[in-house]
Length: 250
Image (cartoon, rainbow, N blue to C red; front, side, top):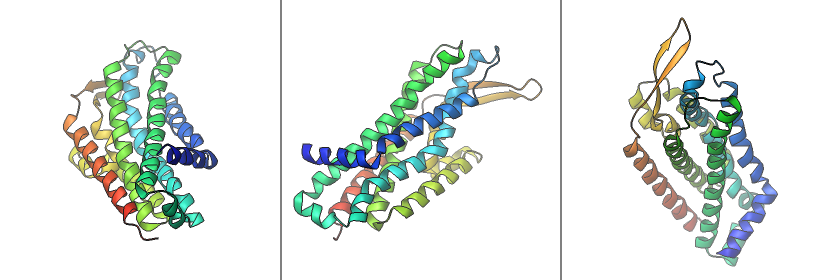
């Protein structure tokens, strides 16, 4: 197992996966910072505005990012026509375990860097609202769970079709559907897994004063049932991807 993970790390280094893992949270945070409130009266609810906008930005960025990571993870085997050779050198179980471990590590890095950037933005912008640590921890868990679900669905597609293009197309379609569901009634979002970042979010807009352009935010209870359902769905897709790789004809 150690040898398999080491081999996957060497492949990732040559694929420059680290650049993708760094670029995604940087883009999300820069996007948030560009839209961050700057008025003295708005800084008292600035973290609420930040945690409201982050899931929306994740809905735009993460489905495509997960599709890129998943397709690149299996793309080297497709381009080199090496699955048959690999299966003679190592077990399918160790190959899948190494790829899954690397994918989860990359997702962990992306989500953690994004979470670490939130208080940094607050420090740079001099937010006066107390830092909501519990809300940040919940947001981290939700983002990680949804990313894992999307990642394993994309990995499943890549293994089944032996072509990274469909996975990338599904990632783009997922971004559009997730963003579209944000403007639909709340129940629509439950049928669009790519956009689960938004219904899982606990920060909502309570009121918007058109004259003064002041937004008032409210906090709803943590969405534990949907988060559990997301984790279960991610687990199902994990085993589906393993089943597809285990039974793949080479």
